[in-house]
Image (cartoon, rainbow, N blue to C red; front, side, top):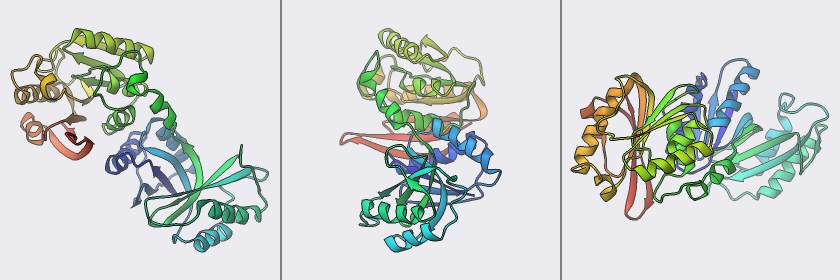
Length: 344
């Protein structure tokens, strides 16, 4: 069965990687996939009810995605082809007799100039002629058309609560400190580790606990290290606010107070520039020592995601890690974040 993931466009490379990491976390292994602008279509084998239950769990944890669709058709990106696909398709596994529907369309980038409202009307007419009635305000089923390089037509089986991420913006939390990751990116990089509920995740530069908050909301047991007393008190306020299962230690990331192989995942965003020099002699020394410590306390085969202002691949490899993937996020003219996914 084909399922489509309508990506948000926050960071297309990371968004795609997050989809596959979340599928892996939920035990879903696609046979094949197609990738379009802002959309991934995956062929997922198995019982439909089991697959969709797992995909709803994916929607609960994923960040850089709008909707998950059960695909009806993939067709050329023009109104007649899309309307004909709706006319010719069997939609009995997407909508039950007596249920109401609505059609919603979205253009991606500059792949088409189709008028979305007119297309929604034409496709809605095709579904109406199959004996179903529209309800624009409170439908039972939402049919979705994502117009990328091709048109992906399907029914939404799960949507991501993107508003919840915006409601957790740093300035809306009990304790705020500038320069931190936004919740959507924080959740996405947590997901890249494939960490599961009940596992233990470490952030050795936890700051105000933005990353730990996102992991904690997934039921992960989170542990943070922070060298600054006032910041760790703020982190405590934030984690208590979101009822996380957490432990915080005021300490040094270069000398972690944990046994070898203690953690299932590590995700961290070390301080940048001058703020990194609170305890360390140099940024390079801080990175080398903290990466060695992270490697030591991470379990074998597990993943770490590190965000840094400098390329850190060589430092990670010197510490013993294997670099699985790397990304860049331009924040503003003077700051580009380097994001690397590592494995022990």
